[in-house]
Amino acid sequence: MTGETILSRSNDPVPVETRLQIVLAVMSGEITIAEAARRHGVSTESINRWRNRFVDAGKAAMEDGMPGGKGAGRGNLVDRRQRAEIQELKLALAEATVQLRIWQKGSEYIDQVPSQTSRP
Image (cartoon, rainbow, N blue to C red; front, side, top):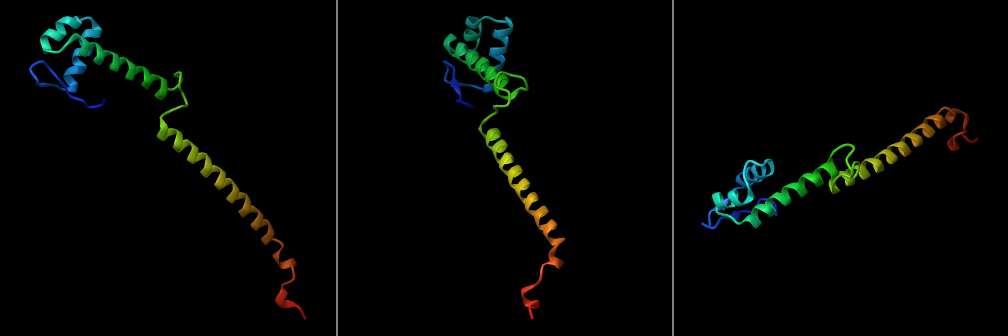
């Protein structure tokens, strides 16, 4: 849940920035999960959940959005739709170009074709 507010034991919300700082401190080894939980009045389960979400989101971003990652070229739904639309537009442009060239070639010979109104 993006943007969710976690309440500490004192029912004060723990802002996202604070959660991020806690997770980074725990992951860097500056502080233990238990100590962070005591200092901020939250459960160790909450901190574990924040850390897991942080790692999962980072992994997903690496897979989906980074060149050469496991999901390279996959992108998110909007990216995939845009790529599909680009392909459709390229095809339509190619077809229109072919039609235009045919008409241009045909116009070179228009003077050689007798007009229906020029019949005797």
